Length: 140
Length: 425
Image (tube, rainbow over all chains, first blue to last red):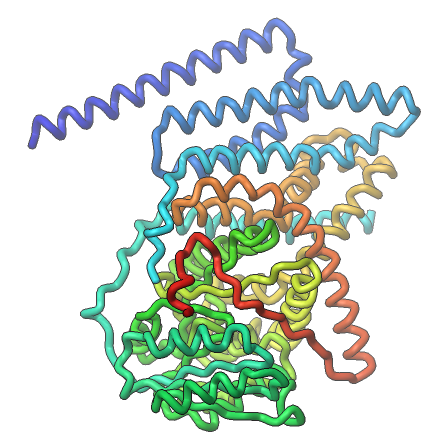
């Protein structure tokens, strides 16, 4: 019994170390990217990634499930935020500039447009960590 | 400057609601899930089940058959169908059941008497009720066979005056709208109501799949027939009188969700108008009430005003846009000033999406989680409904007229997933 508990705890510690190592590696990559091209890290990216990470950490991370899987989804969300905020604003703004449309319209619709990826990615993440129950489990 | 101040006030209110829903989510997520109560803990008082029905011929047979299958001792059970002036075969079908089973009875109200709303029908039923505990079910509902035992168990506590069970959607696979309504129900009951129960706040009586003590309802003078949301009205009257309402998550009952946008409009409009009526009626008494704790008062005030929130969100969003175009110092590239704007544009009144996600997670239904982004158009639809409800309520108040309502049509449809067809033959 004591041996079994020891093995379980060792497994948990190993998993925790793996996650920690992955987080340090990712932070290092982000730092390198920031040093090479600081302009990529704009206000939009920080604000929306913050909203997504906050929701994610306080909901999905507290639920049961594999931690590595959760971390992978969190990473995907952050990458999506990064790519989205690198590509979408310049494209829209150049379009607006071409047709002499005010940039303010972009600022006005931007939060709503970003809400779609935040909520979709969050919902998709939750769907991946949940275990589907069968219809037979319905208690009538 | 005034516009900016109003914008900040609105943002703060919306932010409060977001925080409230986040607290609900965390309360349910961090709390160890309670095991379902076993049958040793039940007790058996006399119970009356009221089923108000108006033109429900497609569904009344289903619920009455279910009543005959209930495991509760029949000698302690009384079922009363209130045929509220039906013009179809509702009364005749209920009559057939009443002839066959002693514990089932029917009250036939003439078309002249009937059609005045659910509150009026329930008051008519209450006059004939003999049970110590009164339970209510809508005609389109399909409860668990042991739901009565589960719902009456909390009444052993003399402070508990009412109970509310969980509501699920029976025709969920029918179309996208019924699936989205099912999501809303999961968020509202599995997480919203459960969290209120866990945190000692104000769980709401839904008017169906729940019940109350007969003594208390008589003391309170029955249902208020002027209210469209007689259930919310009763909830607040119970709490203001110093009693408690308990939410029983494992007492499950299935309902038939509306299957078209038109029906959705009529149903939600009725709910919105009714809830707004309750807000006007109970806001001041709630603030002044000495029977409620501070956290209960805050929750009660937020619950009462919840149907104003979509309107507030829309106004605040438009206001934010105006400030932005006017080049306000607050929204001109200043991240801190823009945060409330981000916050309610990103989550806003749509905040319960994390409640819904958690509910789905707890129910073990991962695939349905992916429909959550589709709730956004439904939220926009709700903005229009709530705005219309407020305008309608104000106009009718000014004109001193009684507000009319549309009855939801039920079709007796079942979800394929539940394998229930054999039960309704």
